[in-house]
Length: 146
Image 1: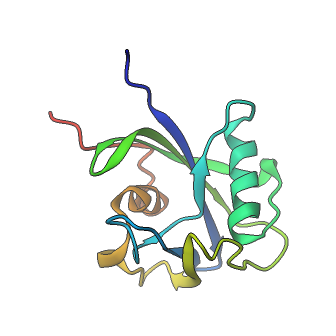
Image 2 (image 1 turned 30 degrees about the vertical axis):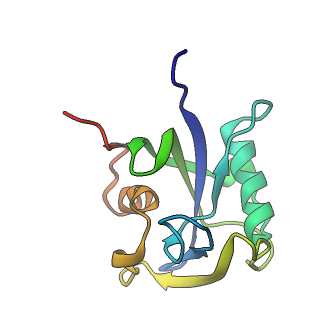
């Protein structure tokens, strides 16, 4: 059987010079690390619809799909993750104040200045999209043997 790749969607909620991150609560090596609001694409939805849904489910904000801008795609294998393709979207517009709607999956939410992110405690996969925001790099690979 052919290995399939999951598709994840991630959202960078950017307010001025700040970025919203969530501190992951899990029973794996990612527990206590910071990451972006994210989730898996479901079979019956577009990537932007999934991003809107995940943002609402995780942090309670409402985003118009038209306000999402694709900034990065990451193809990731290894590192304890199932093979996946990650789509990263950025927005500066939403309604509602972010709140931790999934305390079983997140210890807390926190705004960080884009110039002072917790680099040493960021999940590398999430950091790929954050770096794309800074550099404009639209594609990356992680875990592939060259």
